[in-house]
Image 1 (cartoon, rainbow, N blue to C red):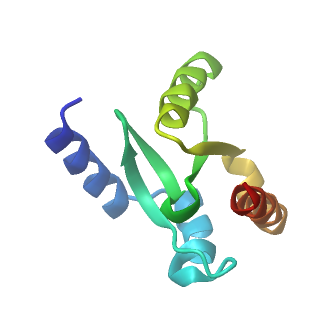
Image 2: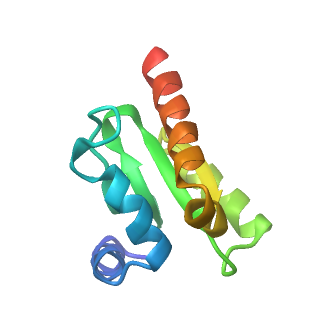
Length: 115
């Protein structure tokens, strides 16, 4: 996918966030988590990560029914090739256990800062 096309897709995804994305974004935005700036629908390589903390090179992916393990492996490898650590959560985890998801994100953020 070309860079302009990917940017256009990312903008559309930002505008049309899913309920799950909105729920997590409401807890990540405005530096609420460990004073870290997150962005939503961030192009990395040929993919668009759901959320990313660029300063610590952490990408967060939310997985629903449209994801498959084989596609996710390729996607993760590509994003990691750009120097990002990828963490994934199932949509139902975000909806049912947002505090646990946030704890896991904070853990990964602290690990990233320690490196």
